[in-house]
Length: 271
Image (cartoon, rainbow, N blue to C red):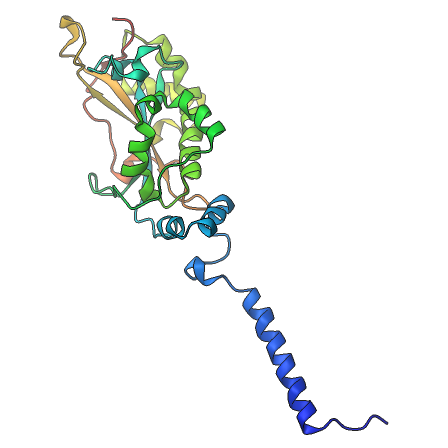
């Protein structure tokens, strides 16, 4: 028969068991550095960088206060013919008609978008940066730095995740619209015609787009007062896993509409 343990031994055993349970439970809880957020609320790459730099942790874990995104694509030819022909991105012909202007966190009230939020310096993975420049030739003039400071920093995302989302959306819009825009260079078209082209490429895409038009500074005299398409913008929800762009939105539901285009407008090309 095993002799009964002494009271002292029983107390020691109880303390050991309680200590083991406390250790096990604490290891299963989110770290205090995660600001009490559930596990995996941000991409692994960002979490790694946060451990390396607490300033990054503070900047990227902030609450992102906005309602949706506008993905803005510039008509490259129109941009260069609007007084920018001497800029580095206009020195050589762009490989495609649509290029990235920016991915903008937006609020439902037009003009009330967040901007110039605190953020770490922009450091993109070099291989990805080269791929991004193909769709964002403005990087030659540091457009990506400007967009990160003014808009991207307010998205609450790691820079590679933020620009990766812009790159993905740009490729989709390029595939849907570039054939029509190339064919229409130097010609007149309408928002209805471009939306129909978008619908043929991807059903449902047309309603997620708005068009921005204005006159061009360097247009020939006969066309100086005519509107040209300068930007195509897509409305996208911020319902991705980490707050990145997710579901395409009907722009009417977020109070965005065409501006300056009228019944018809021109697509810049060789003028």
